[in-house]
Image (cartoon, rainbow, N blue to C red; front, side, top):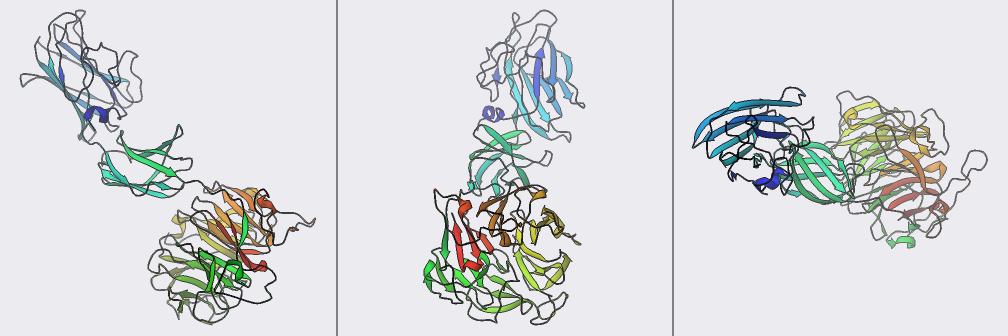
Length: 595
């Protein structure tokens, strides 16, 4: 990038140099300007090829007037705008001839003053040079410009360019990824990406004629991390450091999948009559009341037949096998809703965890299928912190692992609290107030924890649960007072009836298995306090008594509407990286897939 092109990307400050001599204006010879690309013969007040110039006027009596317009004020219409790094608060000028300094001056910004100017008296000379150096409040030079070969000859005024180029130009070497969804984190690598004297760098995504600014989460001289903002579309990424902009390439913003079909992914469907047949593909297998449901990074699904003491694995090709090699009965029974979690990061990455309601522990299933007690004391109830064999649960239900893989959260049913388990040791390290009859747990992409109960959904911000003495979750959706039903719309007025399973997709949307409404709900446009609830899968038909009348086992494909699909007590839900939604349809003895 040449100094001229780098300068063309700057923002902030305008500078006009005027060399005035009463009413008699002289003429200057063709000057040599460092880094300039503007024709020296351009008239004062007119733009050069790229629109930047600073007029220099020289008169026979040698009076030099320097005037600066600061960023928040627009200069006179005739002035050309000189753009500089945003941190500039002072410009120092030096006028030389044959290596001898003839005069110096400084123009300093004072508050929001519109202009500041100084005047210098100079003898008539040839081959003048004018050096301009822009600095921060602390005195750090951040931009510099030089014009040479200015000669006073008499006659009319001719404009010459004086461009100030940044001394610290950001340069981008790459993006950690060139595609992702809204909310995903991206890292920009390069040099001069952050300066101690400047404000936090900005990241701007521009596509389809609109620009949005991203939230910068971390910045150093060599890297900037940001989250893809809502409203971003595929387009260019720019970094602005101290007002100086650098291109960072193109980023492709993924959009949410548009679902069109609901089909049976695994299991024959009703009636199962208590049978189980594994080591079969898709509908050739027989499932019995699949309850909890989770997914790993490879797209393998895991579910739990109600009270059968085993975990079932369903591959991305829909092949069904038994996953664990042994262990007691009642892994994730009906009361232990949403009772599975796969560790995708941290010290237990690659292991599956199941809350064993009947035996009061959390069990770990290693990648080889071996089952061990991970947290709690087997067959011993209590509300106690400690390592396995000492720490206790009263009724371990829903389970979730935070995005770092370092903490596990367990809904302890009878204690009405949420237990925090260290993932390195299985030690129960904390308890915080939960809610009566709390259910499913799920983390969003920002590590905020969401918790369901029979009529509502609560939110627990990451900053809150990570605090030394975390407060209880706060109401996010529904009424929280026992009011159940089916109502879409704003989260504050939405109604649910036993939301048993929850899962976030890659676009920050929360999918909910609304068990006793027998439909799948979704919360989109989520913010700290807002969001919109809809019913994308299944249709709610009131039986006249405030209950769902549309219960069954119905798959759909175009042109049939997704609202025509029917479920029977959907209790578990998972979403893969492609946006396909999987449902553990308990009373239909099947795992369903919407895509």
